[in-house]
Length: 300
Image (cartoon, rainbow, N blue to C red; front, top):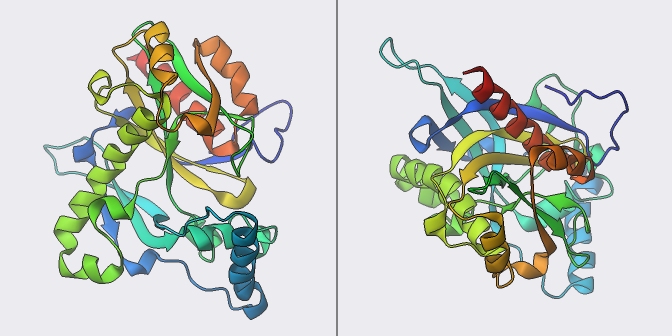
């Protein structure tokens, strides 16, 4: 599902929706299959493959604080249908493992398009890229405003752009260092990773906005967006906040990760629509997912 517009959006803002659930999915409706079958496949062009290490070395020399942490790799998803008594949709996320170094050397590389494979199959297109699964939250305050951050000029990607609060689910949060851990306790690990999908987005909102977790509703999963520029995927969630926009602004002034952003906006839908044109593609896709949710709620 592509973004349609009378004017073509800039490449940084164009996106594709990989999955959409306007009615929202609860944690019991989202499962995970974490296996090395969904890991990145090395590119057969050795020069291109070796550029991953070269780019990381160059970036590390410029920025001493770079850290190569593990990430979950997005390898696709499938819709599972329940039995006769269960008509609720159920999504299974196909995840592998990757790391930040490989993300910098593939998706964020100046050569990123050379890693892509022409195909109708989404997972084949990106089989040589790191594609860590990011996340984002559309947070609605008690006075019906949506929270949007303006990224600082110090961040590596999209300085000055508008984004929803978010980041990444983290393998280390569930004790995963390699696939060996997963093979030994596969079923219980998959359950923990599925829960991390929901736990991590609450964590990100608390860290970036500064509001207490107790003010946030349980997140509902509304879909997955991937920006066209460097094919970066992100899952999106909808969360209600029991605070009004003025109270949220007060908490934001002491947010843990406040350095990543310069300002917090609490805006109605009409303003959010205008700001979406200055969002990275994956977050613009998050806005499209939220709009689908709002439209569905109007119908029902």
